[in-house]
Length: 226
Image (cartoon, rainbow, N blue to C red; front, side, top):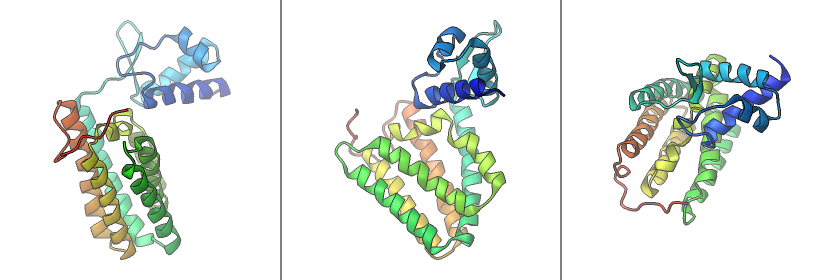
């Protein structure tokens, strides 16, 4: 792949994951080429790669659109994440050291500060939450898990889940991280695995409730919308 193709791929992927390009949006090659600062040929290459990543779909007329997943598709992603991240948590518990545990605690403390703000700082929550899970995967030290999870964690529906959280959900996510830290401190892989599986399943139900137009799980206080 050329540098121009790589640049186009990264830029279009970023636009999809951030929500700048929404599900169902048409992806015109000329407009994308201008946005990426490349010609149309690298954009075509990038769109083929993004189609393989399931971020882009192609119609029968060969027009490209941002993929719009059904709730069944989304549940499938979360099910796979629950299995793989639970496995990563078990491996991480067995390999945990004091330095890695301190980094995890510091990251979750930053999450705690972000959700204490009024309104909660969801952007910082997202950034630090991603860091927390990435640190667990780093300690797990499994290249295969890293590759498999890489394509799942960065899906737009996963990235946007926190935007459906009420205040109680944000605090519950932080609390589950604290439980994971307790399991890691004791090097208890079975405990860590169980917490992580529940953590990911709860995240799916938060997304699904929002998708169906329901209020957040057990949330008595809606966080303010930006």
